[in-house]
Image (cartoon, rainbow, N blue to C red; front, side, top):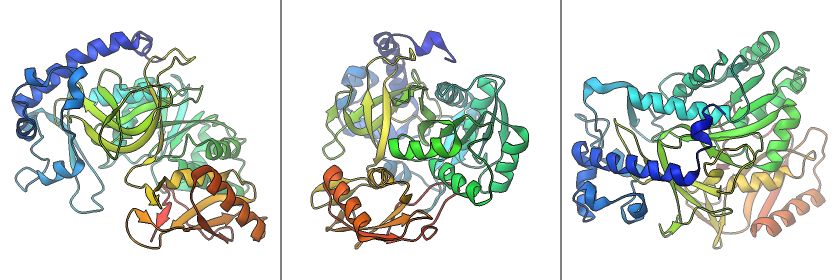
Length: 433
């Protein structure tokens, strides 16, 4: 553990500490955030004392990403939830802005330090240790993933930053510099297996023995993980963060039973029913949407932020000794499809399809018949065959039957030749119109 005295602290003691931080955080919001003074006031909460402690947090309203965007103006492009003065801000990250103007995420020095500390705990859980070499594919540009690079320094690693989109440079760094670990998205990790095989590069025989994946769901799917571990000849663990809240908040240990909350003390986690908003108890096996609240943030703290990540939770003791709750991301609630009343995550479809390897490559695409969440059955799927597999009706029928049995969804399977579906050096697209 990077910080055993913190990471192994009994969760009851951690919760008591968090309650004090939370009360101070809410007081900070009332003092400095016009957004939350207005929002909480409309909910009948006029002071920090009215809000109470963490035991009462479920009575407060959620924060939606759209609300934050709506509060931005040319004079205040960050939004009215900004709490820090201009001179207090040391860094401003941004989102990609694919749907319009980018969202800006400011940080004070304390915020940045806390982000790096939580991320370092999350990544260190994977088993990487000081003195080892790690090659990274994150871009240290405008996006929050760049802040994760500081966590490598905090762990004491020799960091080899390569960035996104230069596979030859990445493989050459692995070949010549012999890192023990690599960090990248699950999609890129899968792409590299094929890329290496086509060029007779022995990826599984390289020095990389730990692959840390993040940026999208998938690293925790058993079949997909098995495919990555076999192709890399390495242990695969995953990490997860939320841009507006923090980088790499969660990280998986070597026991691979969910990601521990590495940002404990900085973030409070809740579970809700995504349809009703009702709270769900954090207990082994529970699932729902993850809701996060800052506990010690200064620049732009968020209260009950809906992440739209659908997760499964574990709170029982882990053999690694860490006491924080663990999660595994099942998928994004805003990516979820509803097929004749059944909730279906594209990542769950991929997990079932991956079980048919080596007959299939593991690449698939849901081709929607119509726009929107609700779809009529059968759900059309393009499933890519492996190089050595010829198309056949029986394979398609077997996959269709398994999907029906596991996910209770009717599908229309189209098997396509190897190489037809797009690959990604960042994140894979599982759904298209």
